[in-house]
Structures are given as C-alpha cells and as structure tokens.
Length: 144
Image (cartoon, rainbow, N blue to C red; front, side):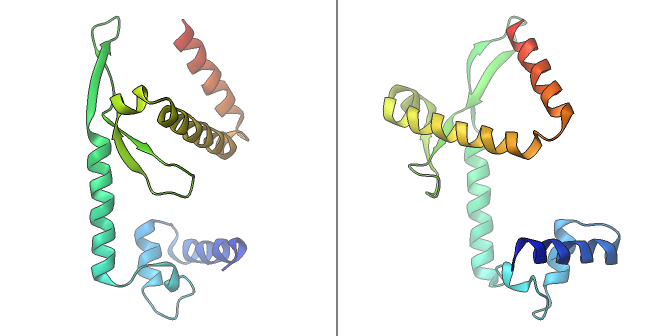
C-alpha cells in the first residue's frame, strides 16, 4: 500500500468517525477485508510477545542514574542504559552508560545515532516557524 493510499484510508476513517486514534484504526482494521488489516499482527500469541518486548524496552529506558546536581540542588540524571545500534537497521542492544562513555567506538556509534535522530526530528518540524524560535530560545537558555 502506497503512502497516498494509506493517507486516504486514514482520512476515510477520520471522516467516518470524526476523529482518528490508534484504537479506532485497529477497530476498523479488524475486518479481514479492510485494506489496513494486513498491516497488523493478528496472531495474539505473537502480538502478546511483541507487547511484552515493548514493555521490557520501556522498563530498561525508565532506569535513571544521577550524575551531578543543578545549581539549585536538583539532580541531573540520565538513562542508566543506552540503546546501541551498530547500524540504523539493527535492533538496539542496551549497555550501561558507563561502558558506552568509556569505549570510544561505542560512543561514536551512539553519537551517530543521536545525529540521525536529531536530523529526523528537525526534518519533522523545521517547516514550523515556531520550531526554530523554540530551539533558539532553548539554546539561549542553556548558554545562559
């Protein structure tokens, strides 16, 4: 299904329902004849396993460590485990942040991933004038 066809399907759901949510899309796509049906995992065993994997990833990302304090005494913290991908298509392997920082190769991988994510984020919002103003304001705040 092309992006245009997908867009039209989603617009059709929006027009029919008056709103568009992920739950509504799943409800509509439940019908095997629906054009979006094939885009979902309908095997409940596999879907449940996939969901648990997503929950595990969220659990890993939720752990934080404090590495310093702000001037007001509040802690500066970061994730305890960093997702490392050897290539953009690889699955993430989580490593302790201390190991990532200590290994130049792994640090370089993570920095490249950060750059890819920043560029994708920028592409997503750069058409909005408010985006540039928000970034400039934040950069000015951080520098000051």
